[in-house]
Image (cartoon, rainbow, N blue to C red; front, side, top):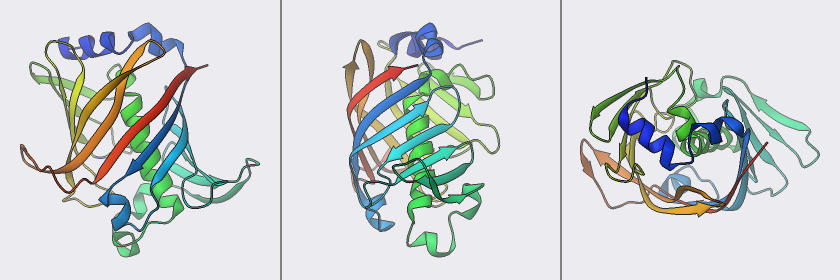
Length: 234
């Protein structure tokens, strides 16, 4: 049974029927921040993402410096494909390779394909995740949800916190540990703007900064996400 906060969030973000009646989300985003710089990655500038709502499948183009190469997440596996749809590199069970070794200092395109795609997929499909029976949701206090994800689920960390406005139902903040970066990478993902995308209100700007317990630092900005456009398709 959905909690009051979960139901209110689903309703304000389009309603259960809407999310169950559509198969894909297509978006255009720009992303920058210290997390990219630390892993020696180029920023995303007007990158295109196509995600399946019902399962962890996401494709981002471009994933790196080559504008013709896409990074694809399919469950727990990732691959790179060219603009003809041909697979040119792949890595199964991608999470098993994080966070140590050279990944402490440098991520390749497959690493970024895993991280960016699962993160976007979680962020954009949150209303549908609230209805996912494989995720254990509890409302700790009014508007404060705790999610416990199944093992091997492509997400930041097994336990995460979501804070919703008690009046509007809109997401305000998402707390997690970005374990593929480090077990110490506790972060606050704060929604600073919402936008109406063809009749559906969704977060359009997010700022991610370090978090120590309940204390959120204003700097450094680890990730800055801006959503330029978004549509739902079948």
